[in-house]
Length: 268
Length: 135
Image 1 (cartoon, rainbow over the protein chains, first blue to last red):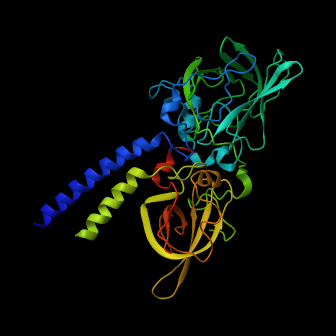
Image 2 (tube, rainbow over the protein chains, first blue to last red):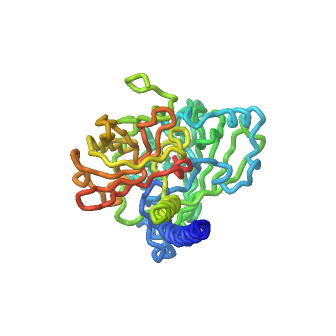
Image 3 (cartoon, rainbow over the protein chains, first blue to last red):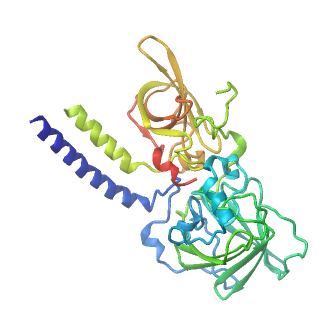
């Protein structure tokens, strides 16, 4: 009798959990990882708005659209497809998540997107659109990524930085951003996927509908990869009332203490 | 039996409903999914600080010993967007909460749920082991 009760309780529990899971799946569109509310589904398929100059308005804010936990999987590749050179694969596989610079509040860089909103900011001057800034609510560590839209080239003597040197252009309705001059310090993901300062990225951003932004991402790094890699990321538009808020990561970062890889003031 | 069923259902429900608490670093490096506790206590402090909010709750055991649980949540901005403001949980409030324990420092937890006993309101937390996925 008791076992029947347990079985029926378990069955009921599973049934409830399925209902809850269905409910949870429904919730996912409005409450994804990180808890940032997304655009309601019925508004996603509307047309992408346009700027006064005729180009698509890519400003956002958006959620996602980059790597985070595992660039290989999130970029659309199968396990093992990322063509890391042997030393780079060894480095990745030996890295521990807690050692990532991002956990210590350093910049996440490209193409990483944590589960907080981010946006493009178009800077128009008397000469037209001269720069686009890319702002992330969290993960820039005080930096501001700038994409020069004034037709300049990369400098010959660029020195390595977290966000490198980015130049952009419109190709029809696609915003193309070409970046060199990255340092080798940031990881592409918490898995530890590395790169070198030879990294060159090309982002091709399109907005096929109101709620979606796509990044066709070219990863070119002969220092750590045996060939150029093509990845694809998709960002979703956040709910219209969601704006970027202040988030100063170093304010009270206690990462590491509960896990025992960093001590607190009481040496525990 | 009824209690067991309730616990089972609550456990399954929580498992399915949890969304990441720790969006800046992973759950697994900090917390132990096998150490899950539920207590009643008194809020000592609520920190609306980055990168993650923290709630400190004093729990008194039957012998009168007070243990302060320092529990991590998601970012203050995320909590704010879910409708929980600075006036909604204040020091002195009696609460029931569920938390995962820290891997090394057990009382540094990952908060899963927290409910005010004064009116039964459960505040948004978004906690649990799924936090190991996003950063």
